[in-house]
Image 1: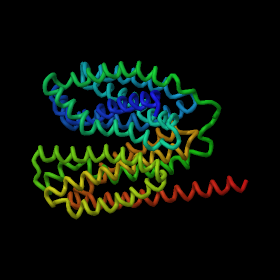
Image 2: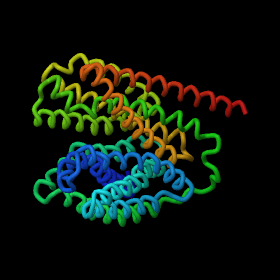
Image 3: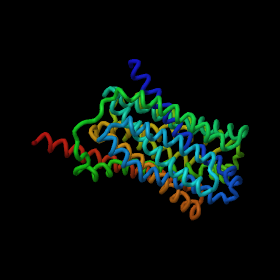
Image 4: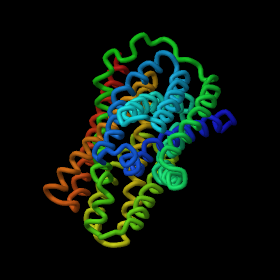
Length: 389
């Protein structure tokens, strides 16, 4: 890997770490924000909801635009908007302005996260694409167990507003760095209508990610409550469990890159979905087994996020001309899956209890595997038709 490659990966990693921190840090800050604006916890939860909905709607537009006009300019724009929105979050005069600031933040991150994945897919050597993508994905996942706790610590000493001020300052610096880092990437040419006849196939492909997200988040959203209910875990034990999960997610992403480059994107993405199904069944069986739960949470995240990274690599290979739009739709699919997963999880808890969650997630994992196979068959048919013509 040359110097330019190392710089690109470093910039991508740091940028996605900041985006992940913005996503994961809001939840632990909600009680303090609720108190500051004298609103209920349910009302402050809208900060997360409007962010996710705006992201899901806006990401495909930025993906499509970047495929036609180049990615660097949109990433830079996104980071400037990110800085402005976080400054507005820090100094919002009312709760209404706070909600507006999170809508703008969702718009900003939609212009950044999927396009970082796409631009790394563009510039990575074909035999190292899995590894390169796994490295930048690990930046986003590291925020889960490192960025969010750092933000919470900052709140303890300087108050919750300081967290958003710091992110605004870092965002401004990264806007300059990203602008310079991606200037050397040639703009995309040709392609008047990249989506002609391809949108149904793209939506079919990213549906695998939606069902995968259900298999991960129907349980993860309620993990703390489940561990307390089933195992009587203390807050420190729950924090330790989430740390094991977070480290597993990062390692899974990084290991997946190596395996994907060696054995191919399809084989690894399919194998991880089968393993994910088996591990979720084991997680259900051993959920109340005391300390073993740490091990199974680690393995669950390791295999689950290995699958996510290898599938992203698979999409960049199968859609070389539409990487921006495909990565954007894939991220939208991810957020839709997280939302549906949280609804399904809530329903399962209300009707059958926490202990059923891992089994429901395992069903989602096997459906995701079946869908990924259907995708493979379609691609094979298309290739045969091309060869015949």
